[in-house]
Image (tube, helix red, strand yellow):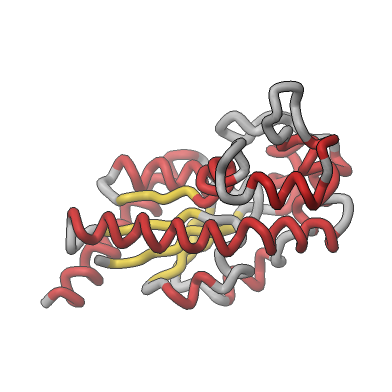
Length: 211
């Protein structure tokens, strides 16, 4: 199985590319969804997160209000580091388990881990191939603040958007560490065209490895 990382800054098109890769037959693991599951009541990270950030981050029914938590951590890098220290090791373990499960079911699959902090967490070192999505900084801000980003992400204020972008590794640094890039600054059709070409290449790589 080919283990692929898909990363990029917030609102640069990762989710769009991940959806296309899934449509083309890749097995996509979404780190964000794993992290969200881990902070559900009773899940592995829940108690530690509530201990660290207090009951003020909880909704009336005891769930973590991710908007309240985000407001705390993106305003203070030290708090973000503490959250990551709690959640990231558990996310990485879950990703390993899911990749192993995919391989058992389909030994020559293309397994894709979509994660914003893939490189920051060092997980790219455990993968065979890393892909970075990118767009212009102006597009990032616009997608976060005017609702143009595809998906259910809520619209942020300009200050919130800048804090989220600043909390991540600079795009140029991610691109330097990648094996391939997908330019998501243009049309959806252009993004899809690049994703299709990428999957063709990944399948060729897996065939070479298997051969």
